[in-house]
Length: 326
Ligand code: UDP
Ligand code: MG
Figure (cartoon, rainbow, N blue to C red):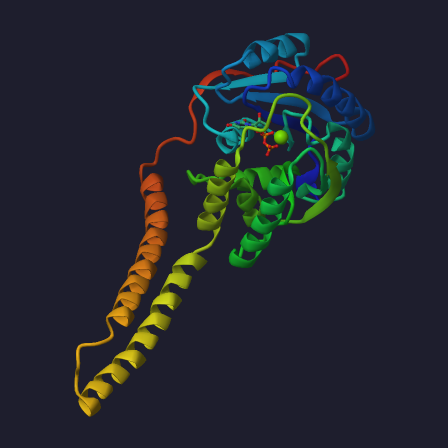
């Protein structure tokens, strides 16, 4: 173990959006796992819940959890900023030690936390959970997720491990590195990969949600995929260039042939179908390329506004070590 890794704190970070039903089920599981972590590794543990602008009783539930345990800190954003921003807000507030990211719905089993800590203590900076099975998720979601990881794996130069979500432990220096990335379009899976350091995967079975339903529908997942690809790859722009080059080459060849034919055999008015086909084809290709450029331009526009990533409504830091704490 090297010196910078010797930190004695672990903060569990949970972003929640309308999870009033899930949190009471999750909290005991987290606490049980933390008890083990405290005992086995002598770490001081904290839990940080972020209410990402929930519209149900989530905030009230969180307040009750915090009242029951001084190790629990609460953060409430001014509105729903999305999971990425909520996680960023929480990670910004982890003052020292490592951070462990969990989903609020119990799909990332807290019971595995001791194994994550074990790997961190062995010297790994980014310990991530890789799903070997996804239960309770439909064929479409599994299929599209599979495809997405393959596509982005090909397109992006940043290593993005497949079937890996936000369920992970970040060492203090990985956390510090992540905090420096302030881009507005936050494709977290990519950001985690971008920072590098020593990473290791822990395989786990993804359970179905404890209660409620997924906050992401297919359309949002599609946008999420676009986000990922455009944030971490300019390959589509290059593809547009190659498409353009290829069509230009083809057009040049065909043009030469048309002119030569007219010179050799005269020019009776003919070829309307061919002309229409060519015009429509070129129009289509141009529109697609324009759309691609637009996607990147739009992102550039959003970045250029330099707005904060999130706004905080209430911040109640954990007040101290709990009953089982150090
Ligand atoms: N989440 C959030 N803000 C949002 C949407 C989701 O903080 O705008 C949280 C949500 O409460 C949960 C996690 O992100 O803890 C994952 O969401 P979900 O379970 O809906 O996604 P899935 O597991 O289906 O990918
Ligand atoms: Mg979930």
